[in-house]
Length: 263
Image 1 (cartoon, one colour):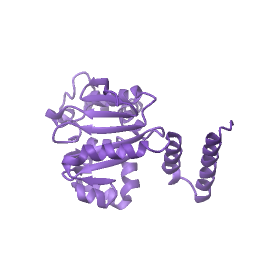
Image 2 (tube, one colour; image 1 turned 180 degrees about the vertical axis):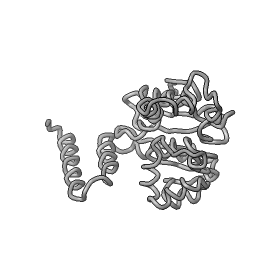
Image 3 (cartoon, rainbow, N blue to C red; image 1 turned 90 degrees about the vertical axis):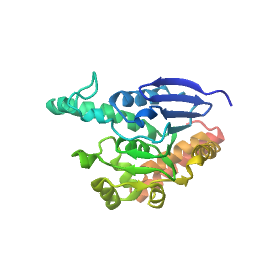
Image 4 (cartoon, one colour; image 1 turned 60 degrees about the vertical axis):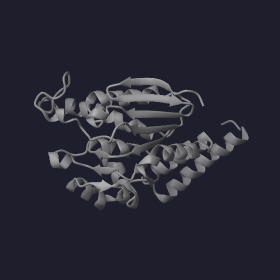
């Protein structure tokens, strides 16, 4: 393997790539990887900078927490320097507010691209925006000290960074509502039991478990994984017969490709 190539390092985000695996690291441990608009812009840029050779993206964090959620400075009257405060946003037009939140959401959307498999390595606290960032990934490997919580409703807000759909898809409407409405902690063992976590491991084994999972994914041909991911992502929105048709079309593409037959 080659040495990791640092492609981005700013605003609490580091992006490195090594062969077919890229790693996005939240690297502001002194603030427990609290999030801000600047961090979200860096995450969005990380998605744009991924080399075409990358097949797996690992999301990890330095320090004792995955992410403590939105930086509390956001709730002060002045907000972040150079950024609109919550009060400024509220005073703007509906269109301006919508555009601003959509830009924040961009940091959470590229993780589900069909050409990538993304894995969140979660330890410690994953609160609010941190929870939603873990949910943005395809898979979650969770340390036994992990604690998820969706605290937005306790602040009079809603989860608005793309987390509501994957959470509902993973654990069902009733469980998702209960988790969001109460803001309670979901610990690692429960996360695995209810389907929020794909794998629960001791904290000391987290990095190794993620690397093992990445290696297993890379063992399959890339195009087959891409087609399979697309089928599974869209399955819940299709009728059964439509899904069967999508399977046939995908398999036809794979057979033609393997046989070297052009379109």
